[in-house]
Image (cartoon, rainbow, N blue to C red; front, side, top):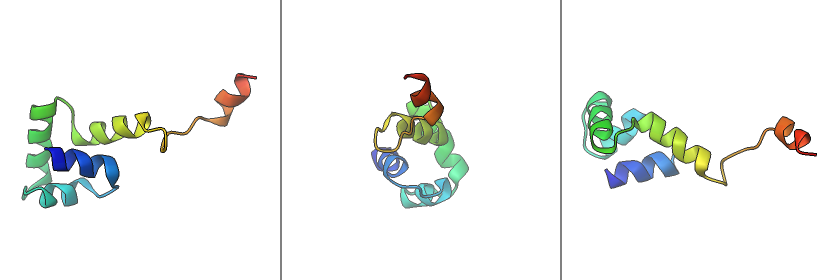
Length: 68
């Protein structure tokens, strides 16, 4: 699962490509196993990690304007 987590965090590869790269023939089987082991779906994991990464998170201008 370490390799799959890294691919989800560091690339924009589709889930089916990641599943195949880490040895699953089916992206559904990969997603089911990922959720069983980590308690979160691969898509949710990628979204969560993207939101906490300061290099990829964006603050809307409306929020910045309201802060003034």
